[in-house]
Length: 69
Image (cartoon, rainbow, N blue to C red; front, side, top):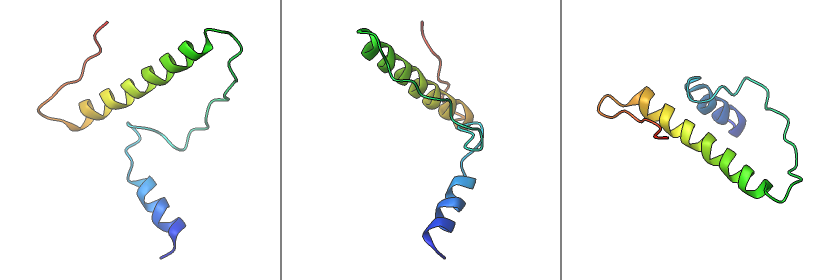
């Protein structure tokens, strides 16, 4: 078995509820404002928080992850 086939097998095991790799990526724009570093870091943090929250809620029978505002 070659490397690409192995990677494709692993990708097919990822639940679509976690991330749908068949959907096209959103176009990324470069930040232009002075506050863009904060905005970029916040967006990345929000994305990471959603991924972890969804993963816990979709797989755990003992724990529930909730976002606290």
